[in-house]
Length: 398
Image 1 (cartoon, rainbow, N blue to C red):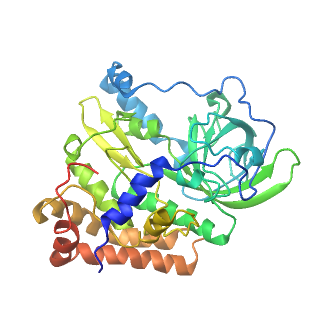
Image 2: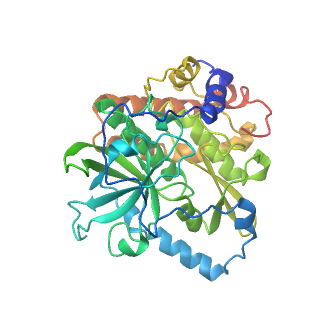
């Protein structure tokens, strides 16, 4: 098993991605478009509170925190695993031209859930915003990742009851391979759910995109709804905050080790705790901090084939199949409880690979083999020492 070059993979991704220039020209493909780019009243984005301001707010009492947790755990959208079919009508030409990281544009759209038994197919007026970094680039993805903003009073008694905004993973490009990448990224989220409830819940979907100007159906693709940061925090009876510059020692150590071993399992070098890149922070009233990871496209499990022009970034993405452990240095004795937890879930994880609807046989075998390699490593004291201990540098954070 080759030892990966951490500097070439993680370094290239973490240093290049935050500084990527986002082109503002037309997208390369066509997925969706609309009625204008003005948000309707009542759906403008509220200014974000600073981390200090959020943490300075008085905490509710224990009973209120527990009530919020129960309400959030019961969110209807994440109670089922079967794909949710929906139609999204918008001016997608306008949406997919909005590639600037600093953009605050909101695009009106109509989302309609179809074929969901017992739930009224009520058209919901929503706003769309583009998001992300790498996949927001028009030279990488024809269709930008989205945030969907809801009006809370409109979603009552629908499958989106309780939701105010959700991230949506879309297919990036039109070829069938990118629909498979969406399914593999969905698998990564589900694998993390198997290991810990301190993770983003997801719902697989089948999205049909419609041009709102002409009424013409543009395409239909796999998509994934990702639970909102604040809902993850409510389930943990905490608050979601951004606090760049934190060190390994600043986190709950059990959760930190589990998260970083999980990143090793799926071959993910594309995260930074100190930079809050693809990591969210939940802090409890007792001051305990938990790292929650997300965004799993640039991983060995997904193995994307983005046609990016930057040679260094292209090389880094091509190298993600080679795993790198980027977490805190641990002895064999310190790692063992976490590794034992993963070994106990091996059968469940491999079964999950076989259960993802729409994943083709070749990708399913490839994913199962990739996970199998991880379990081979953690089942051997010699390989654990070589891959997770001897390669670990005494770094305070990542």
